[in-house]
Image (tube, rainbow, N blue to C red):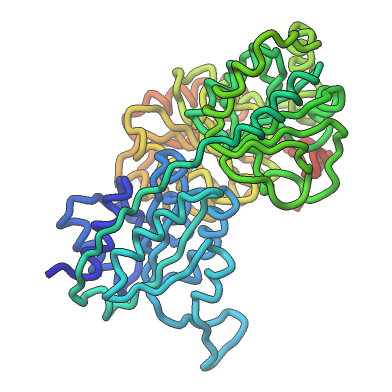
Length: 520
């Protein structure tokens, strides 16, 4: 007879999940790993619950199947990683022990049920029992993939994990969306036909399978395209109609303010600044789920697979006059210096480090970029030509994201190049994951943007201590040689790029950028 742990792993495999990400811990973890090994499901050990959750979230984002993190008794420590998955709308299941945890707000005998915390962080928190094991994992998988996607928490007590259980006839896979409403399609077509200057804004809900349709619509209109950080590459960034990143601020305002229609494709409320919407143009919302929350109020919403929506719109738009955009002017606007991140001071800049790396890497290279305002030049500067080539936490909100994200990306795509851009503070948060790179011999190149060498840490020496090849650079020529050597290394490598210290920061899109005086 199978055990509860056996059924959970069986359910995970049937969701299409390729791997578990495991944090140190006891409790139910050994039984789950024993079942995973018996069923041929690989697992990767991380050094922290946070890192395991980020790896699982990125795996879910890249594959579409729920990423699974097993954190055992580390339910409290996993909370920031689960919050990241919630904010990034990543399909993820986190399995923890179903036991009370000591509250950081109290001492002595005080404790609380961790499910209370996960009721807030996750889409659902549920205890696994012997008679509900298979249904629990199936429901968790479906809910994590249900729009809007996100994390689901399952609590598994160690004594329950070893109990015998019977499988239930159910499917853990997500159900397809209903076709888009015909009346909504007609209303959307009327909006587009009446528009002279449409602009497309693609968000995290616009996925790789939607990208071709978005590009076709933009070229047929023609319409400039902006993407959020999470949707970079929806239209290749070198494309004349691609205007770069939508920040909700001044970078894109000259174009968006001239628009008379904004076609928001997969734009999520979590990506919109929580303040009054600054644009007067009507908004057509095309996504897999309805728009909720603050920000814009759509004039029309069409809910369904965006590719199918655009396919259904095409015959309704035959004969429409072309939009009143000068494509050459749009291309000039994207090349203006005001649309590029600026750096104060002389010497090697983050922008040049990113540009050099992009020049030296082949097509299809994946970049993971850390959270934090100082990483804005890297997030803006990496040129993505396809969806999934630039992995950035939503709103640059998750410090320490880039290194565990790079581990997950390399495991999902072993044949592709992965580079990781991080700062010293982000690296220090997940420092032990350098050992994960070394242990798995993943050929990830970690590029540490060390602002002016102001940190007391020595990233290059730390990298060598973990067995990575490591190089240092403080000017462009040295950076080019160091990055080339790292890319050429047969295994994980680290480059410490000592970039010019910012001399005074400015506000862009409500966020502090790197181009300014040093912030502590």
